[in-house]
Image (cartoon, rainbow, N blue to C red):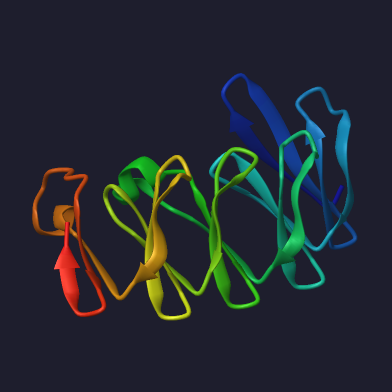
Length: 169
């Protein structure tokens, strides 16, 4: 191999390796988990992010493809996002989604705003809300959604919404 980078997760160790500018993965026991065929592989929040033809995908350290290489970007949400720590924010064709543990929390939307208690999503100018488990709390039919937790240090699971010029909680 041209390069070897050790990546550990719990008791398991594995290595990202490269050969001829292509990347793969070997286990701590030196078994080949992923052949060197990707343009890049890097560790992100318990996942391996791989690139192929300038697009990104998600795989497990064992080489299981969790999401094909269809994303223009993948970003890891950090601890400041509370219940969304370790969640991946994906972008495909200018639309955003959130991915956690082998599945989507919320599907693709025009934009996503992470709050302390949930995810405000926007689609065609209308806003909706998902919780951290991926349950749709409010359909995308509101003009505005305000998170009360934004103004306090407490986690408040209530939102001020605006629809057709009227407000509600």
